Length: 282
Image (cartoon, rainbow, N blue to C red; front, side, top):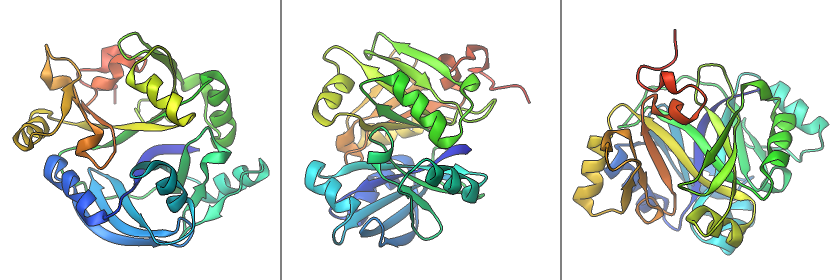
């Protein structure tokens, strides 16, 4: 019932200041402000391609303050779109999920998933802004990826025949990509990490939790040039071919680790490497 990775939500001391790197590096645009009584905060909304980024300052008791007290700033929640918001709400409530209505959107606490707080809204068309096309992935690092796969398929009505297994010796993890729709990259990446890499260390500190996100861009060079000009920390996905993508260090985006891959390139590890150059068939 999920159709897209629609947004991410961050916690910051100063949402305006935290929004600035998204504008500087990714040409995101501030499109509004938002107050959430359910989350307990207020902040800025940025357009990033056709997706959005919400950056909140806690204003009282609630999930945002709980996150800030425990972890400080950073990636708080993932946002998804659905074509049937009422139907998904019924499905979640039937399964005992404590859903909270938040201005026409559904908030699902991290305790009801596998450590990933979720905000779900109805699909909507938006004019794109900035240097990326859209978000397409959020990564949920867990102790048992198979159990998490089953949990999300059941909660969100996902078709497991579309899922794609994934394993990375380079980054030290295995898991699954819960592809939402045929011929589209939108998904939750569920990972189980090993060794002493960054993801494994993160999981040892925080347990099952939201780790990072990924976006697509038609060209990586303009983003890399902005990062280099600012002296921001980042890494190439492939130093032999910088056009494939970059990883922006959390120090550059308010505590958020973000990957940006060239448009369609993520099909390389998403079950259809033959689509990585020109995309899926029409």
